[in-house]
Amino acid sequence: MKTDTADQHWNEQWSKDEVEAKWLTPEEDVMVWAATLEDGAHILDLGAGVGRHAIWLAHQGFQVDALDAAPEGLAEIDKAGGVESHLGRMDALPFDDASFDHIVSWNVIYHGDEDILLRTIAEIRRVLKPGGTYLGTMLSKRRLPHEQAKAKGHEISRNTWVFETDSTDKKHPHYYCTAAELLALFSGFEVQWLEDREHEKPGSYHWHLQMERL
Image (tube, rainbow, N blue to C red; front, side):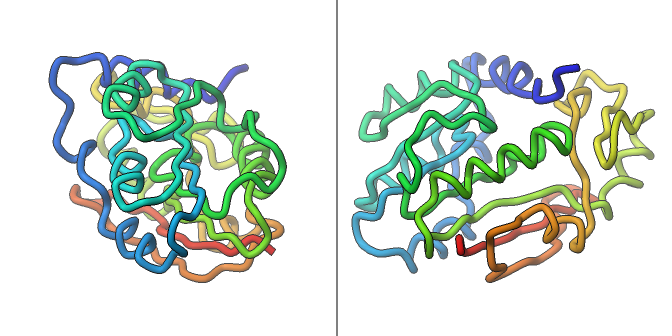
C-alpha cells in the first residue's frame, strides 16, 4: 500500500488561483536558522511547496535547490527564478552523497508511514554533509486526541493515521510520534534543538527540531 500520497492534495492546493498567505510567508524559525548559516551555503528545501522558504533563502544569497512531488508548486518556484527545482520523492532524493551544507523541510516528512519516514531520514543523512544542519518539523502525538475529536481516524500502521475528512490532507497517511520515538528515528544525527509547539489552531502540536549530521 502506497502511503506517501499527500502530494495529491497539495498539488490541487497549489493549482488554485490564490494560495493562502501562510504558505507564501517564511517561518520565523527558518529565518532565525538562516542567520546562523555561512554565506552562500548550499541548501535543499525538501518538500518546498510553492517556495516560501526556497525563494526567500535564495534572496538571502544562498544557493538553493527545491524538491517536491507536486509539480504545480514547483511551477510557481520556477516563475520566481533563482532556485533550482526538482520533481521527486522525499525517500529517493536525486542528489549525490554530501551534496548540501544544510537542509530545511517544513511540515513535510511526516506524510507517510514509518517505512517512508525512515527512508526519507536516511536520504537526508546521505545528501547532507557531515556537520551540516537539518531544520524541520514532525507531528506530535499530543495532537492525536484533537484530530480524533474532529474526524473518525484509523491507525493503519505504527503511529500512522488517516482520518475521514475531505477538507484537509489528513485523509492521507500522517505519522505522529513522541520525543523518544522521534529521536530514535534520527540515527546519525545529534539533536541541537527540540520543542513541541502548538501552531495557530488549538491542538495543532508539532515538534520543531534542528539536528546536526554526524
